[in-house]
Length: 113
Length: 114
Image 1 (cartoon, rainbow over the protein chains, first blue to last red):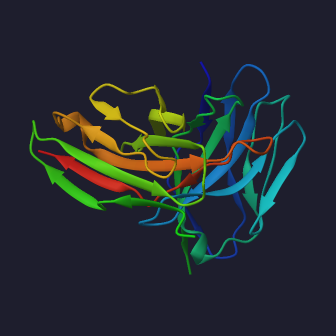
Image 2: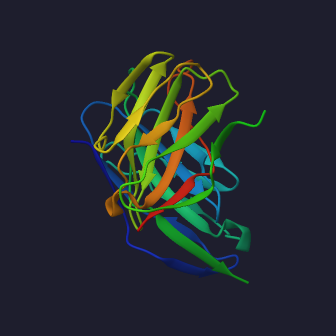
């Protein structure tokens, strides 16, 4: 079945450091790929998405590129802020009525001043 | 818009008790979902609905029931609570009007069964 694998966490960075969070997937067909973020005490929010190979999703300084050849969707940000501290989930979705999301385990990012 | 709202925020149940987790959305979305999030794990789909009167099982439906009598509401029922149902429950909704079905999540209900 479909699956998403995220790098092990947690990750702790200093403010203004460069961030990479790895995500790889296994799926048949051509899934859409997402990064969701969960701030403390809140539900998940969509951070960015890409719907086809070589698409780049971007939002709030975060970027991720849909790489079909390596089945990856790594999340990057050039300079993290304390306010980026959250749990980040990579997910895939295939269209149709049963359009459920398949999530990775999530990774906790802590950014210290 | 309030988006997706869930009640209660927290609940402690004794083994064998029952309860209903409420979920309401005001975005006129057709699709609604219930997920559970166990510690250190991603979310797993319990049930979903593609419209009023239509529901279907997800990956982990055992021990739960749902109904969808209106577009707005999608309650999740636990009939005989068990410790394995201790989790955080998220409701989500989406509208299949674009090329990918983005989902909007509620703030979650943290349930403990002892």
